[in-house]
Length: 199
Image 1 (cartoon, one colour):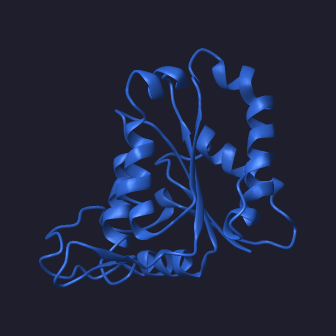
Image 2 (image 1 turned 90 degrees about the vertical axis):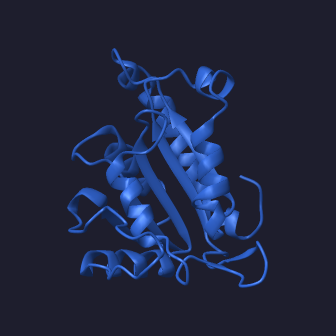
């Protein structure tokens, strides 16, 4: 299985990177793994004209796009800031998840083709908000958006969104052993997602 790991934190050596390290270590040795850190890419994160006219992809985005198209399973890790991913990762989505590449609207209907169909995914989200409140109090907006309007919209399914928190006041250190077990289970079961088994 070809696995693409995307580090969506704009800073290095952060918890998002460490979670990806643990996930990668738990993958079967036979898997082919590629890793991208959004912060290391040279690109304009602003989609200047929307879809009104093409905005040429920088070489780093061309390579990232090809890595997404080549992957069987995609894992994205990022912190939750103001209820969403960091702006740099949002800009990456805006620039790379384009019509004709990751989805395609139909000309005479409201429907669309999901051009990333056949790929599965995991999203690892670090948060300071207690997870029960993120889901109960706020209704898990980022999980719903990623499944319905971003990654899932383009066909990545099943898409598992997992939260790791709260991380403040030593929370990450206290919970790390449990998180490592959770990441191991996610990595172990990733191949089964593509074969239609529940994980």
